[in-house]
Length: 149
Image 1 (cartoon, helix red, strand yellow):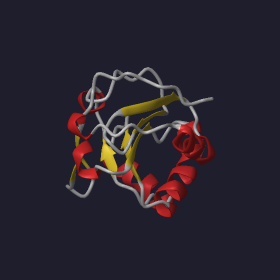
Image 2: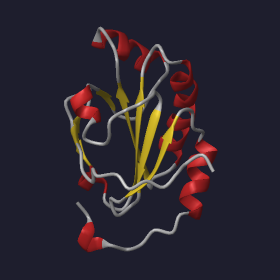
Image 3: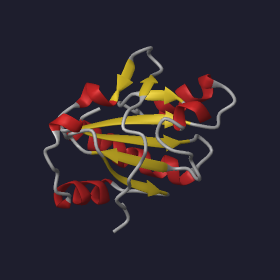
Image 4: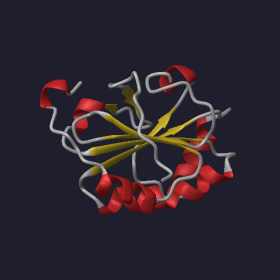
């Protein structure tokens, strides 16, 4: 299985997207939250984006947030967002933004939180919609309302 269970330290994040909206893990209580770190120069990142768009647009129980990393000009990132018709929120990332989740070792890197805000999985490298949905189907979600961040 490509997605692996993780025990991340981070259980919360605060990201501001390119429109100025702030996103926190608690905002999406009851939904799976997928955080995808990517870059415009990264072919595997660009390859997986259509699957992430399809996942986001087809499921009400999943929130996808893309975090663009390693860019010189935010305008270039937003041109990619427009050209690829990315409908989910895009955050202009930095090392400090990424560290809210984990030190990144490679792009793309994808992190999945369960509907109760618990870190559920991580994938370093390319991921597909099918792999994400299979993981969500097979992952028992424990009801731990008191531990929600």
